[in-house]
Image 1 (cartoon, one colour):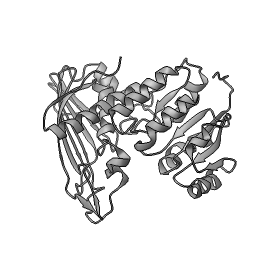
Image 2 (cartoon, helix red, strand yellow; image 1 turned 45 degrees about the horizontal axis):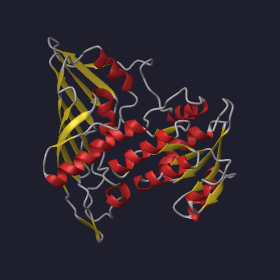
Image 3 (tube, one colour; image 1 turned 180 degrees about the horizontal axis):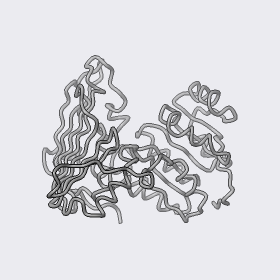
Length: 349
């Protein structure tokens, strides 16, 4: 399939929930070169409701597989939970469609590796995963500080991601707590594995412990942890402690602390404020996030530019990035099952 730079991209949306409506749709609707051709949501009625409200010229569909046979559609936009990602992605690629897929990439590592393998069979088709917004605004600032050696040699990392989303024991199980829908994607583990590995390199081994505070929710047996602690090692030798919780009342905003032999770096994910200091400084100081280093959300534009570039642009996160963080999610599940340290094998070559 070839695309000219002025090609009008025709999109079929699979899964038109809140994340699509709030995060992706506004950017897509601003572009005159985008047309939403078809929508398949959980039911025909919800597909029709979405089309009436947001894409009046689009066709609501009951079965997402129907849109793969529509020749006018060249891009499949996946907004479903993880349990559908692999099947829709593989089918779309085999039907000759570009794929934008919501994160988390897949239910487990095996599905993620299959998605990557199939994408490599169709190099002319663009594949991209939705990145997390966490740390996006200050991403270039953090990478600049690390490149300048503010830490020296990093030796210790601590991440806290705590909230009270699942604190009410009488609430029904959220879809993120249902392993048959979310897979091995526990709390914000995959999100921060993606962020941390982008900044500090691969996690190469870990030991994980989890706690289920409320195992029964309105008759549903929850087997995914409400609380997760991960001890990990990075490829550069740094040790890490990662703490995740959905049952902590009045928790502070997500926070990262990194310590090295020359200095310290902290990052508040709620405010996107970084502090840094080196040996000899009296205290940590705020590092200014200047306009030239501030990163805005332009995910949809990145994907569209890659499609129109005819292979010249490779958008990130790609499926290789996804396999990297799914390796961590799989290792956490394996470690919990074995109650043992797990070495993480390299990604597919």
